[in-house]
Image (cartoon, rainbow, N blue to C red):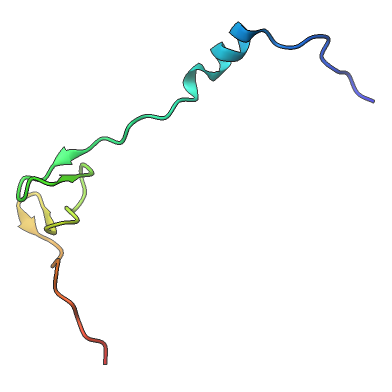
Length: 65
């Protein structure tokens, strides 16, 4: 059998190690066109605009043949 720890880690040592394990909130920005919240540097999912231009047509359904 290999070596085992002599005693358990203290509360402070455990919490200092876990200090950087938290989650960061998602950064959101308002769309310039419609005002909906979206990810920065990405096409708006509600209107399809990016930096003042329509990049993706949203709301049109294409029929498959």
